[in-house]
Image (cartoon, rainbow, N blue to C red):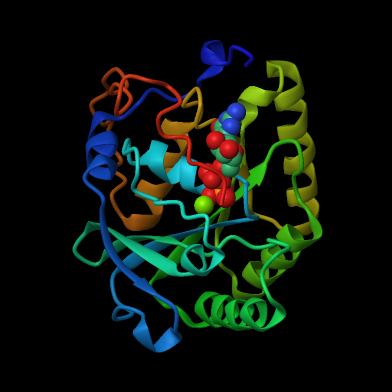
Length: 240
Ligand SMILES: Nc1nc2c(ncn2[C@@H]2O[C@H](COP(=O)(O)OP(=O)(O)O)[C@@H](O)[C@H]2O)c(=O)[nH]1
Ligand SMILES: [Mg+2]
């Protein structure tokens, strides 16, 4: 693991940390008709299987097991809703690109995902997770294309940044940002690590903006809260 502590850019906001630590499971759905009422605001999380989505959700909420990971693809294919507060949700979308999913199930999920992204009024933005060592795969670009078509805001977490040196991680970020400026403006990107918690404050800030919690004045800052169990790796999820 490389040391990234020296370039954590945004101090942790205690208000945001408390807000997302209070997030609770709301419900799981596998059909468009089961979605909660299309009111309020929500932010969805998407990414290839194994990109680090469950680990990121756990770290962002400072909870070990919020995004429960199952080895059964059927379970992880549900859309999971988590409540930040009444009518404010985080939405965990099924990971894509998992080779072992049967075609019929893959098609069902692709249709559901497309319909959700196209029609959901409460959806304010999409957090897309990409392993920093494999950014902007063809499936990622397809999803970016759908979002651009709908005019949906996207913010990319380049996950597992601890796997690269600081310089290499910054270079990937700059390359990704260059492609985004050309092909998918105004999509933004940041470095993220569930292992070192790099980028948690920056991601919280984006969630706050999209969910309507952002305040113009300077929010009180505090040192980051301790990891849920005292172990930096505790929030890392097992692979799907
Ligand atoms: N080194 C490192 N490993 C990570 C990080 N995030 C996730 N992982 C590992 O990557 C694998 C997939 O993570 P997971 O959160 O289950 O990915 P998901 O399939 O997108 O939900 C697991 O073995 C995690 O422990 C990270 O920030 N750094
Ligand atoms: Mg997962």
